[in-house]
Amino acid sequence: MPRATKPPPAPVHPTDDIAANLAAVRKVIADAAQAADRDPRAVKLVAVSKVQPMEKLRAALAAGQRVFGENRVQEAKSKFPDLRRDYPDIELHLIGPLQTNKVKDAVALFDVIQTVDRPKLAQALAAECRKQNRWPKFYVEVNTGEEPQKAGIAPSEVGAFLAACKADYGLQVAGLMCIPPAEEEPSMHFALLADLAKRHFVPGLSMGMSSDFDVAVRLGATMVRVGTGIFGERAVRDPSADEG
Ligand SMILES: *Cc1c(COP(=O)(O)O)cnc(C)c1O
Image 1 (spheres, rainbow, N blue to C red):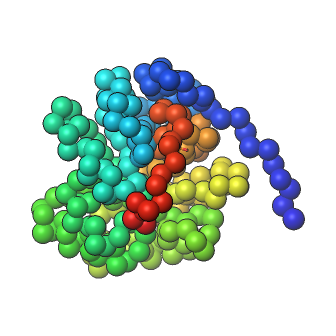
Image 2 (cartoon, protein in one colour):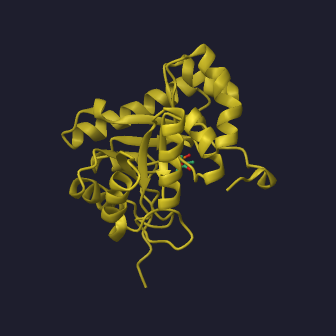
C-alpha cells in the first residue's frame, strides 16, 4: 500500500481582502519562479471565479486582475458580458468540461478553452470556430492520473490526439492542462505534463491550483488556476443546477 504522505502547507491563506490575496498569490508565483530560475512574467494567473459573487469579481478587477476562469458555460454567460462592458480587456478561460451542445456559446464567449478532451469535441470546436470566424486558444486536458472517472486524454495518447487536432480538424493547440488526483502528491503529475508538452512541442502548461501552484510554477507552469486562494471558500453549489 502506498504510504500516506502529509500534504504540504498551502502556499497562501486568503483573507477578506481580495486585493491583498491577489498580491500574496503574485508574490508566491514570483518567488517560485525565481527559485526555478524562471521569469515570473512567463506565468499567467487565472483567477478562478466559479460560484463566487459578483462583488468579489469586481474587487479583483479593481485590483487589476483581468484573467478569469469559469467552469460552466451558463454561469460565465450570466456574469461576464456585464463585466466586459466595464472592462473590455478581460480574458476569459473555460476550465470545466464542455458538452458539444454548448460549443457555440463557448466559442462566442471564451478566449481560452482549456478542456479539449476528446476527438468529437475538437471536431465540433473547429467547425464552430470556422462558422463564427472566432478562434479562442485551445488547451488539451490530460488525465495524468489515468483516473477512469476523470476527463482528459491518457498520457500515452497525447501525441496521437495532438496530431489529429492538427491534421484532421485544423485545430491549433496552445497548451496542455491537468488536474492531478486530489489525494496524490501533485509534483509527479506536473512533471509528467511538462514532459509531454516538451516532447510534443506544445508551449503552454496550465497546472497548479490554490493548494499547489507554487510547486507547479517550479515545475514549469505557464498558467496557474487559483480560486479559493484569491476569493476564499466557495459557497456550496446547488446540485440541481449541474450541467456536467
Ligand atoms: C475550481 C478549479 C480550480 C481552482 O481551484 P482552487 O482550489 O479553488 O484554487 C482550478 N482548476 C479547475 C479545473 C477547477 O475546476
